[in-house]
Image (cartoon, rainbow, N blue to C red; front, side, top):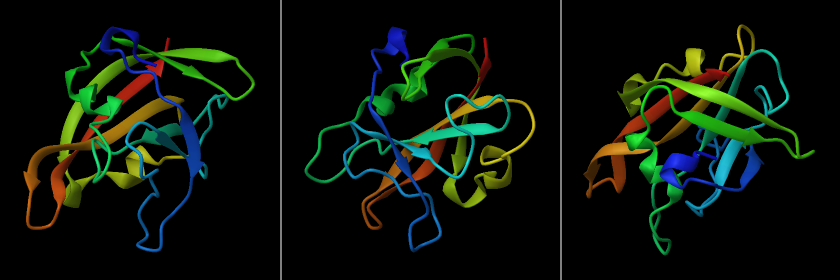
Length: 141
């Protein structure tokens, strides 16, 4: 949850699609947690959560507001067992999808961090996709 942006979403576990990319729930109101990485209770590695900005037959999702999250903003992550942790946003970066630093964002070791990802930038009506990914990285508070 990012209270200041009124973002509070359910999260479901996801894996890898046949395309080799991270699966995402079809509904932009539901975020996907990458189940092969760190989870909400992990003390190391990247907890990666992503959601669509929008989709055919669905309204714009809450994570569309991720582009407005300022550095220093508090993000609360609640685990399935009800325990919660707080993270502080350190950076917000737009990456062209072709240059997304996947090894860094999906890192399983190293310091704990929460990585939030959605689409952004210009929309290409020919491909039906946004050009960029919006990535917020937050560290434990």
